[in-house]
Length: 335
Image 1 (tube, helix red, strand yellow):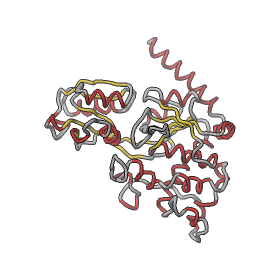
Image 2 (cartoon, one colour):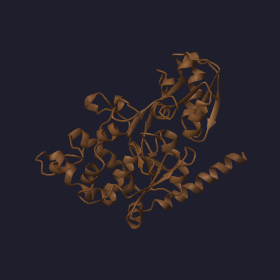
Image 3 (cartoon, one colour):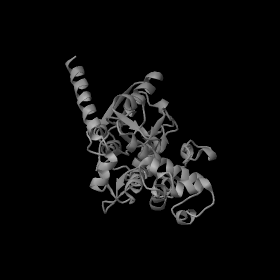
Image 4 (cartoon, rainbow, N blue to C red):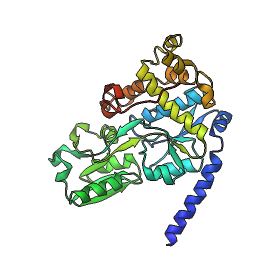
């Protein structure tokens, strides 16, 4: 009972802090001259710093898109690496302006943490990775297995549901970071590693011998990943949401970072609205979406260079293809 009371008190304190911190995020961002964006501690393809300390990835591009829209410069972002356990507290407290960190949109997170999910930039699902030497082809062959997982994620709950549903038992081997998780897997402390499939592919390339591990066919959950903001600031919520939607709209309309300038003079009304208008509805200048596309690229460009076939991860578009090409990516119109 004491633990429950303490948890409720902490939630109330964080809610008050969130309301205070989110009074006018856009004004705060303009005043300090950058967007403070929460990212992972290092996940290739999504948010990862290179040898020079430059952050890159699909999630990083959302941060950059917001900076391009709000400040006119995609480079005006500062990154805060966060573990899964730290991420929501950092956003609630106002330490960061937004979170873009392979985070699953769920009812509990959306409804009880004082947070708003601003869209889905990657449709994912939880899976399993094992070494080829284990000789299994399905997760259903892993009754009694030790499973490496990351703490503070939906992975833990999904894993429990899956094994219970299939009448199997398992032992959790839990780590705080994805790096620690893959090291535990490589060291043989578990029989398999479970996480979002995108993360499995990203972690596999960190192995000394990536070819020794395989991702099993089972997908046991829905994991819609996307950027998150605090509740209580609808203006900032709209800016983050429409920054992502501008990238998807641009791909739908065939506008890329290479042709954005020439597209500004198009007679196509939909492209015209994307390239030079509607900014006042978001409290931004009319070039907000043009800045995003010209500096960051459309959604397809971002996907391809970070996680797609042009990247080390070589993930096919799948569910993340445009709706017109059999996927789920679909943006409301800019009009």
